[in-house]
Length: 387
Image (cartoon, rainbow, N blue to C red; front, side, top):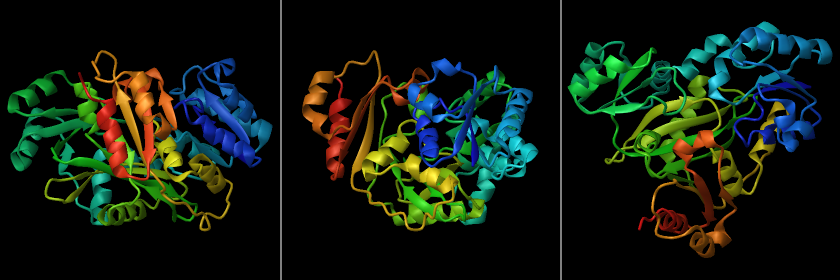
């Protein structure tokens, strides 16, 4: 079996996917911009071949890489990056090289936030009201319907980049006078706590693994406010979250795909869908799931790709597992050494993440796990306490 993995060295933990594929005898073929000798050894040893391109945005270069692989190894059986950023280019290459998986006509509903709302509607799930607003007038019309504040974000954007809360008419006018040259969606501002329904579907579309993350605040606030972040896996998924999540997965018809569905729990307890990301959750979230269940989600994905039966896969959410960040320049009450002395026995990981992640994920990261939710929340409060 020949699998092409696009950008296997980013994010930093995705080399585990390639290593897991290689373990099952797959011919693993990487495409990326970095020099082969700059790849971490574990990744380099997992690849049967690495084709360096100068620009992964250049479809001709990507085509040449796939043509080379086809000529040398035969038909490509699977292609992925597990990264939303490359979803459209992957789909084009799949169509051209007759590779199974997400096609170009399916990508729009997975990338465009305005199209996600149609899926939420189809699934019968409550969602944040909004629509693409090309002008100040259209954004203000939305504000008249929902009231201020409103949120604006790129309709086809990835993550929380260029996502802003606008509180007044003047802020709306200022934003549109200086906004980047791309389509923006305007949405009602939903007050509440963010939580997710995440998982992986098998080749038949059945959910073989699912879990949920609870956040202390939205990513928009973290990026724009420079605040600390913590979030954690829960041992029991709320019934309404799982019900809504499963309906959205079914409406998408996902087969052999990760999903990361974002919701807000409003103060009145109601659940509102915000975004559907057809990819793994970002940062260290996959590792949190491994720590919380004592299993290997990278291996589960590889087993799915090679066609192993997933219905027999069993797992248990043994721990609450919390990711806790700190940012440089802030004055914390407790030193790094004091943090390790107090919580080190509950820490499967602590360290720095790649620089690109740090505006959201923090400059230094701690992971704490416990069978008790109170423990991880106390750890977060202790680690992020200011002087």
